[in-house]
Amino acid sequence: KLTYEEAVEETFGLFHWLLLVVCGWANASDAVEILCVSFLLPTARCDLKLSSSDMGLLTASIFLMMVGGYMWGYLADQRGRRRVLVVSLTVNGLFGGLASFASWFWLFLLLRFISGIVGGSIPVIFSYFSEFMPRLRRGAMISALATFWMAGNILAALAWLVIPSTWAHFFLNGLDFQSWRVFVLLCSVPSITSALLFKILMPESPKFLMEGLRPIKQMFRSPLKSRSIALLVIFYCISFYYGLWMWFPELFARVEDGGSPCANVSRPSPNHNQTCYPVKTAYMEGFVIAASNLPGNIFTILMMDRTGGKMLLCSLLVSSLSVFFIYVVQTKAQSLVLSCIFSGVSVIAWNALDVVGTELFPTQLSSALGFFTGVGRVAAITGNVVFGKLVDTNCAVPVLLVSALLLTGGLVALLLPQTKQTELT
Image (cartoon, rainbow, N blue to C red; front, side):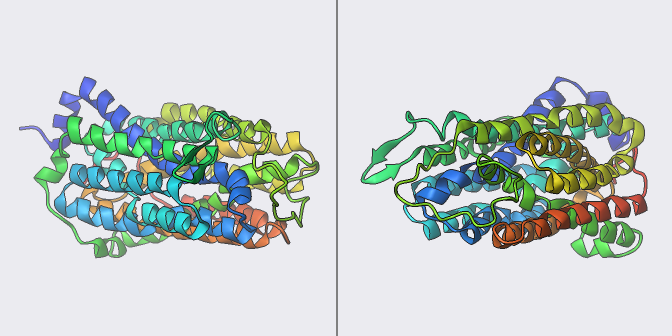
C-alpha cells in the first residue's frame, strides 16, 4: 500500500500542469478583480465626481472578501473544493461585471461590495491545488501558482490600452458607457471563465474525498496556537500595504504635475471642463510596476524548496525599507524605480506566505487560510480608508505606517517553524 503522499508522487504528470494553469487563471482573476479598481480611479474620480474619501471607500469595498474567504473556506471543508470554486467565481464575476452598468456612485459601490463579500475563494484555490501536489515539488508548484497573481496584475495594468482610448466609449440606452466602464466589464471575464474551467475540466480534491471536516477552533489550540497568532500578525501587516498599492495609479497621476507622490496635498475636485483621462504614462507606469514582479516570482520558484517559506518571508524587511524611500524621493523617476523594487521584493513574501499558510495547517482546515485571508482583508480595508482620508492632508502618515507594519511582519516571521518539504496532514 502507498501513503497519500507516495500515491500523489507516483501520479505526477501532465494533469498537474493543466491544474496549474486552471488554478493559476483563477488566481489571476482575483488579482484582476481587486486591482482593476486602482487603475480606473483617476478616470472614475472625474466621471462620478468622487472625493478622495469616496475613492477610499471604493478601493476598500473589494476587500470585503474577508467574509467570503472564511465562508467559502468553511463550505469547502464541508461540501467540497470544486463546487465552492465554481459558485464563488461565478458570483464574483457576475456582480463585478454588473458594476460597469451602474450610473451613480453608490450603486457602483454596492455592486463592488457584493462582488467582494461573495468572492474571496483564493484560500480554497490554494488548498485545492496543494492537495494534488507531491511533497518534494509542492513549494515550487505553489510558488508557480502564486506567480499567476502577477499575470492578473499585468492584465489589470493593460488599462492603458482601454481607458484612455476613444474606441471604448459609446452610449447604451441613455447611459454614457465610457471606456472605464468597458474596462470594468472586461475585468469580470477571468472569473467567469475560471468557473467554467473548473466545472468542465477539474475533479474534486482526492484528499477531501478521503478525509472529513476539522473544526476551525483547532487553530487556536496546541500545537497550532503559536503559529496561528504569528500568521495573524503577518497577514495583517503585509495586507495593509494594499492601501498604498491601490493608490499607485492615482499617486502617479498626481506626479504628472511634478514633485513627489505626496507633493499635491490639496488636489481640486474635477469639473466638467476637465478631461477625465490622464495621460497614458500614468497607466503604463502601473504596467511597469506589475511586470517588475517577474524577478521575484522566478526567484521564489527556484528557491522555495531549497530555503523554505520562512526565510523568504523575511524579505518583508527589504519591502519596508523600499516603502520608506518612496516617501522621501522627490522625482517621478525615483518614485517609479522604488515602486518597482517594492513590487519585486514584496511578491517574494506573498509567495512564501501562500506556501507557509498551506503547509502549517491540516488541509482540511482550508477555512483557516480563509480566516487569515479575512484578517488580511480587514487590514487592506483599513489601509485604503486611511489613505483616502489622509492622502490629501498628510500623505506621510499612511506611507510610513505601511513601512512600519512590513518591518513588524518580517520580524514576526522569524517566530514561525520551518516547513520546507513537509508532508500534508
